[in-house]
Length: 551
Image (tube, rainbow, N blue to C red; front, side):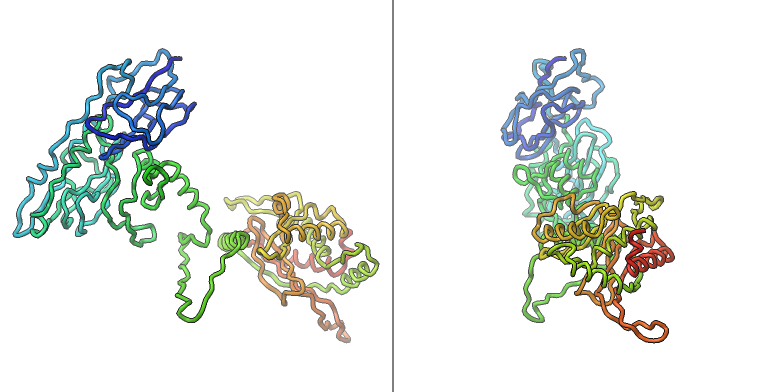
């Protein structure tokens, strides 16, 4: 192995060339043409590519450094036998002067813009100006990747019309005059060459006399041949773009990014005009694009209109009277997101039934009178959890998750039951594990401890994960029934409403009985109605005769 010094190539007459992005890290393996860093002058930005494959041994510049031709950029650790294959390459490479003393020759400025202006024709009192491509240098397969304007649109001087891309870089082609775009001669996907006609712009006579000649374009192109197609700084005029939902927005001059970042954005389908830059002077770097994608993926399902659901229109409520906007807690906000996600992704069916728990209640009262749990009072919920666990064992499809492919059902050999607990911050669902293996006393004690921890915000991650079934009990609050929303990826949830004493006909007379309303919601993709009916029937029988819980 040997060390290879990478230096800044000839940057022509550019001044105050600044390092605005470092694309690699020490120890990283790079290939030939991988971007090492991005530099910027007052006219253009360009990538400095790696002339050889190897490992980055050191980076000798940092963000904000002002550099010049020949300055050391980085040291690569390369194979001792490796040679620079300059011949056959479409562009020269940036190497240490000790390895290749011949400097890289900058591209000659062109006068293409002036020729375009001379090609203008007079039509009455208006002038028409042809916008043509400049000399692109020694590059091939230059493609139009974005058209930023529409025919009939008013364009200003310096406003970007199209974006080109070669195999090395991207470049925006700006308008040299202000006027009305009369025709567009290229489209996305077109391959273009030097002097290709891009557009025709009509300049009203009132403005043509005051038109100032553009000098910046020829200066912008005075960069090394390797990056003759480098993008100008994206200081474009304000323009209107369309978002995916069809609404117009102002792109303005916020798109400020290097070729590598633009390439990454296209690969990920990211509109750079929507990305906030964190680099020097607001420049967009690769991490900004990745963060934008990550943020978009984590957006609440409620904000996702791609499903085709129309958004709810919110009026200005203050027109009708006094209002106050109160922020949701983090827990409430997350809960809302989860509920929407479950509701939109699960095919909900809710089945209602009633359990006669008269004997269960008599047994529970007797245990409390005997102080079986000391000072702690036994509620009906431990009985319900135990009955659910026993029923889940008999009906394993309810203790499962459906595979996202909808091809298989994931049956769980464990029975962990989540219990919805109401707290000041919103609903929390702690999990009681292995319910089937625990007695009523253990379940009641653990349930009390988890409920207390939930209200005091002391639950650990393990205590709120792993549930295979959920019970939501409204206790004394609830009415005669409700539709609980499944806690996906579970496939079922049991809702328990308020216990009531109702008259029940026994064949000869009405008797007062303790009736418990139950609501079972299940995912119809995994469970059909008959299975739901059988599950509910089995659960009702167990709650009606607690002796069945020991079977």
